[in-house]
Length: 309
Image 1 (cartoon, helix red, strand yellow):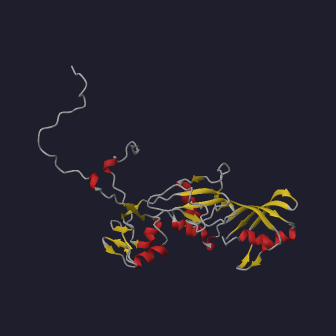
Image 2: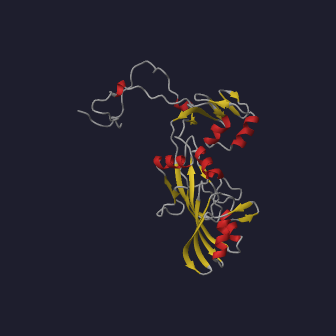
Image 3: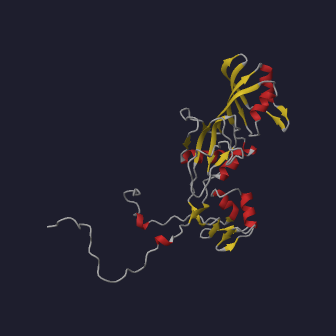
């Protein structure tokens, strides 16, 4: 075990005052279970209404809260509610085209969650979406508060895309896209447009948007009678897509990176949170008698066919 270091004339470890963590307030049952990856809140609310979820051995009621130490039973399994230290995980996933940003797909298509590392007591939350034909950076986190803050339009978190455009582009069209055009769901615009090479009729641009509306980048270009033939997200806020990260691979961000992302959207340190810890069920085959039967000890047969001197 790694020992803590102390100043030469400091207080010995055994004399230090223990650090008291703030007690976690009770949270709604469906929120705790959804964070643990047991289903969506809406689905879990329906299970609570149907009496399929128990808390401390009794049917849960809609809106009921749970605290550390409570026991939850659902679908033949049991969990204990525990409070965790303020740690969260975030990863960058390099999404290939052909994958959908959903946990399950009725059409059986591969999803972005298929290749992610497995979690216990938590679940990955996608920060924004990428459609099936868009590749690149997809930020995943266990920090629901961070995910909501980064996606909220009021925080103006910019997203940068590399776009290959098929069609004629001139300065007038680019100016309109930066000034703003009317789409079917309201005004939209690129906050920045930078040429990135290519040839006439098939050019590359890097564009930045401050919202995450459905297919917004493609619809903006389409408003100028050109088509996006390739689209890749390369940045979300302060997080860039690593150049050496291959398609379908992921890379974990450091605790310092996670802290920076929270600070960028006005959030403080990660709070203590409630989670679920699976409770082990003791099987009959695992049970052993508390006392051994009395009587003479049997002679070992380990060396039965060996001459011992």
